[in-house]
Length: 142
Length: 110
Image 1 (cartoon, chains in turn orange, purple):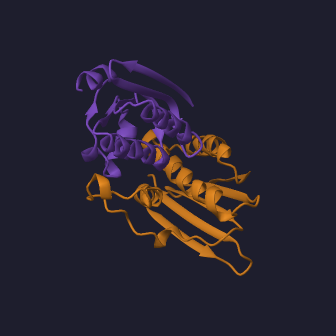
Image 2 (spheres, rainbow over the protein chains, first blue to last red):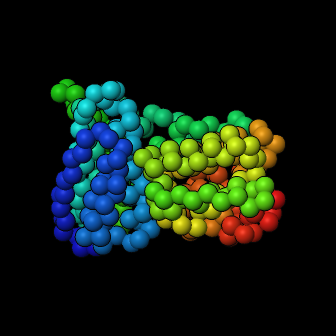
Image 3 (tube, rainbow over the protein chains, first blue to last red):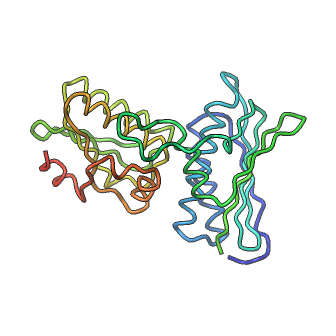
């Protein structure tokens, strides 16, 4: 991957889970342009999938809303931002699931956020006064 | 997502193909539920044609495993591709399931 900035690239989708395939294709295209390894590309794709799923599933309740994804790479770091104007949701406050729990007490929830935080180096959430939620995830890839 | 279902003796084999995300996972859940409703308790999920799963796929098979145990049976996995196996591993799922390299071995294990 070159050190100069590649991108930014942008995709906006409506909050429909059927759009996850479009998001995956978009991310795969950008990670390819940025020269990420197959494994890094897979991990970035998964993290974006999990974050997008949360926004699409919960941010807007029953209303229609949009999710904007911006990503770029620079100086060996891949950066992706997800922006929406729905309900606040800070995934960094979700505790890690108990991975040692036996089968019957093993929790179903919290896995998506956990995987996101494992596969990306940094996950940061902010919300501004205009009600825009911004989730920033970075991964050092070189 | 394509999905096939085959019965081999008492064992129900469900084979999704392609990518499992929050949009396609309900198909897998529906298939698992149909198997339980039909009285199956021994299931194999053949993952050999699955190139990707998010946590949605993990939740679906975990639900299936809990259901199968409630029916005094089991749900076993087959053919996990390396990148998919890594997701299962990271999520702490590998200790929960019996995993086989292919569906035939998984079916025979019952």
